[in-house]
Length: 165
Image (cartoon, rainbow, N blue to C red; front, side, top):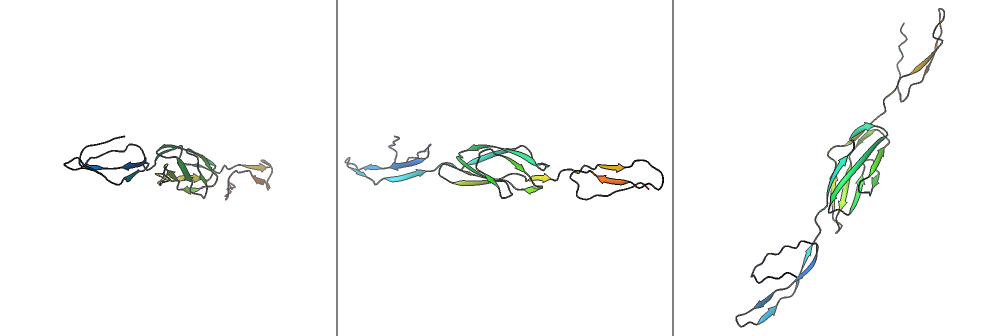
């Protein structure tokens, strides 16, 4: 237990907790009067979180790894920007739909005090690229030639044909 004989001391509490402090004052004759104790309540520091993100941009489905390095944090709540969340310290999340998502993590210290962090930039999930492909039957014949075209494209939502004539 730390003590001091200074009239106006300064003391540093290095650990969180509740500390009862009393002062005994002596007069010239050595008579002592003890003060009522006062409680010093030292709280845990605010939580800090440093986050590394595997990617900020890609094609759906996009797997993103969030690696957090916390200081003074004991609990986490991640908000992936689409209504889904996680309480894992360093989650891996797969974005299924294209869009732009603002990701936040709220870290809590041992006292339950929260600090919210927003990632420096959003996660951007793009549509998969369309791959154009088709089949033509028949490929050769006499004029007038009727050809049946079958679209075999992947991820296409709109199409434009050019028949070369």
